[in-house]
Image (cartoon, rainbow over all chains, first blue to last red; front, side, top):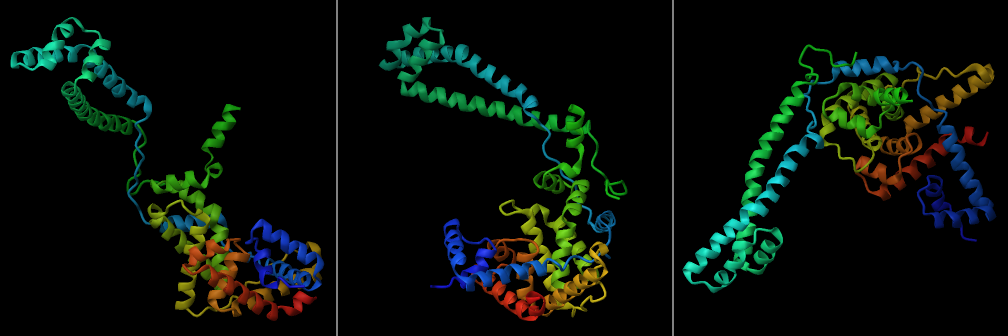
Length: 198
Length: 191
């Protein structure tokens, strides 16, 4: 019978896989030598556990206070206070503006571009210009825009421009909300003020 | 019911480590105080069993918490906070022991409870003293690894990470330390 004493320490420390543990358990049941070795390991762990901490240690609260006195002061930082409730205002504003410009602004631009293209002799625009002049609805507008690569590009460019314009409004808004909310909460402890620890 | 839940939420000791850590990182000293209370015994235990001196162990524990406070922003919750603490405590103790020759704190023998009778208490105290003395006679490296395994329950991998040594070295040091201890404490093991 092949002994597994080289694996017993790892088995005792629960460092082996379940399959390996099962094999060792099976072996140990049948092998008195490995059984005795495992027992010695267990007894050693039990004996080591008797070396407890001395009772002369400083009490927990005193220890905490001693550490607190020695903690270096650090500039306190806070997580951003702006919640989704606050963010809902500019986000909804952005959505409304996007829909509005998509429905009402863009058709006008497209019609102008179509007229301009007709004046310049470009067939692709002039062919659809009469249709566009009467189509303010978003469905007809979208189908036209998607059908023309030039207008599609212009449409995307306009959207990007609008998004950036809105971001430039949105970022300072978040900053101001932070300032407003923070000014209404407890200020950060300054030098000389209590930090909460004894 | 709601009041109870609110009280639970306000009670710092009921908060998780992750929450207390997040608050501590933001400079909340109350939250860090709760972490100190929670892990005081662990840190003192690591230091005491490696250096063998209760007073020095408490000093090291204080230094450990101060270092943790100043390094909190660098903590990445990949491993456990407990493992990170053990790592700092063990390394600081090793440094302290190397700097200063340890005066084994024989005087701080445990005041064992007398509920099992005075004779049993004396025997237990004697055994504890023998274990402590045997631990102190182990080489520092082996002792550190054994303490982290036996007393703090760290896995081999956690010990390897904490001490920046290969996994194989952890295994060999644990085996070596146990072999030495068994030889030293054979009288108590066979009794």
